[in-house]
Image 1 (tube, helix red, strand yellow):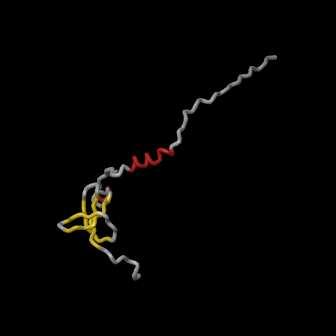
Image 2: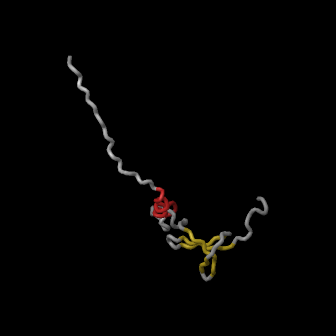
Image 3: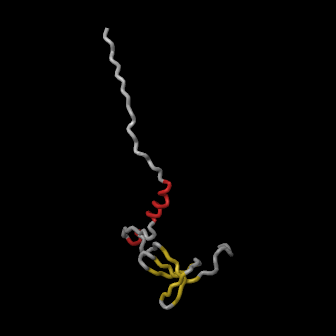
Length: 103
């Protein structure tokens, strides 16, 4: 392996799945602003929206996880770009009938 390209400051970090409150510990270099106490020891806390304990692929259960209201945020964000389509008026159709002259 090449030297000097890998981080040196690995430490134990707690990752918390916010959808089911599962907490697991692993080594990471991720920066954390919050801490959590696990088994009497304080660890930096990284919050996750979905993890192996709540993902449908691993659990075999299909459930909608929309903790941040992503669909509503999307609709609100792009609602200002929606074009108003006026009701289509029926186009006037003029039909001219010419009668053939008899001789």
